[in-house]
Amino acid sequence: MAIEPVPIENLKASLEEIKGYDGVIGYILRNSTSAAIDLKDPSKLIEYAILSSPSLDAGEELSEIFNLGDIKHIIIDGEKIKVLSLAFGENKISIFLEKMLI
Image 1: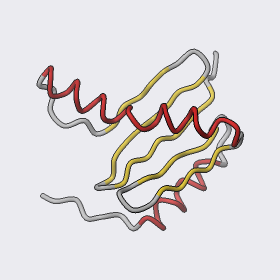
Image 2: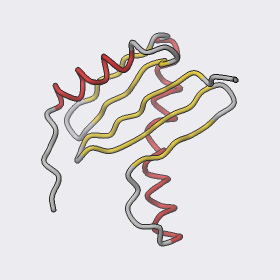
Image 3: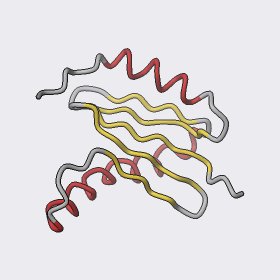
Image 4: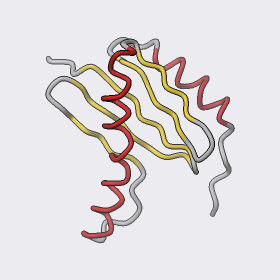
């Protein structure tokens, strides 16, 4: 069963809503023809873009090596931030979150 493409406008609207939640630093939405980046601290743009880009690729490579099946999303849990990267059809999304200590 094929997944129907999600219009990028719908994804952007959802990400704008998510960005308003406490602890959300921002997001990167990209596909083969465009990219949308919205971060609360634009000075971190290059760092987060570098972090975001290879995360799903690394998950896919590890999945192949260890025969894990299709990777739908990956979570990076760092010392200061968390990153959720996922794919919707040709769209790749990374959402950056502050690390909440409990």
